[in-house]
Length: 292
Image (cartoon, rainbow, N blue to C red; front, side, top):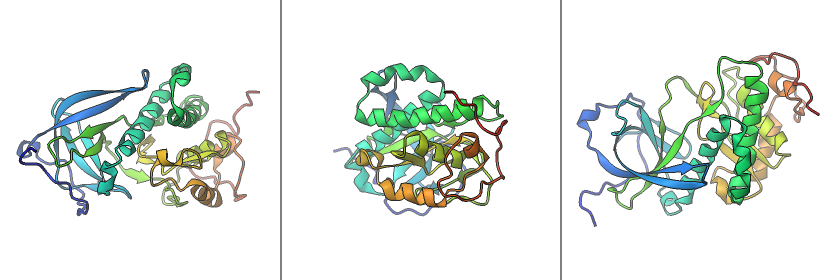
């Protein structure tokens, strides 16, 4: 049993603030777990980090802290820690979330990942359905129309804080500068204060392209750099965490979603029968050309 073990709080006051003066913060040893998509495996790296004691942001499930990786001290990072300490008893929660984000990021770079499907387990196969959808969004909407911005996913890793009591886990990813916005959530809410078509069309497209088997929702980030999505699905339910509302969550989205010009461009079915929104991002043409 090591002395000087740090305890993790489960109830914290969130105070929005810039990164602290790291010279006044103590470092701690950690193990970084990095998902290797091509080999469907994890590799480990020992590292030293400094983590702020006060969260500057929080979501429904996690606190967000400023983090400094001493191997890259000039870069800005964040640590995301669960508000529920029981999540550290089932460490698959952290690893499954990071694995999904790593695969999504890999597929954003192009179609080279398709050849690896044969070596993936059931969870990965379901995840690959999701990231194929992501890639189709990019190639069918964003690359064809040569936009000023592209959809991307942050690279995320699992970090084990070995000097803290119980060696808890957290997520580690780059800090993205800018106005962080949540475009929708997993219970049907949509941000009506900002006219953005891409996040809502993206969610709609995932439902239709998967033939109604899943919905990628809870789209959030800075501009079109996204992180922490939620998946609603009736299949392999436990792998997608506590936020998976299954068919109930899918139905809530379908009831409230108002199609926009990108939905129309992708020939997506207007499931809610509401008028098509004309605000927000517009594609270069009215509808995507039929490929078959």
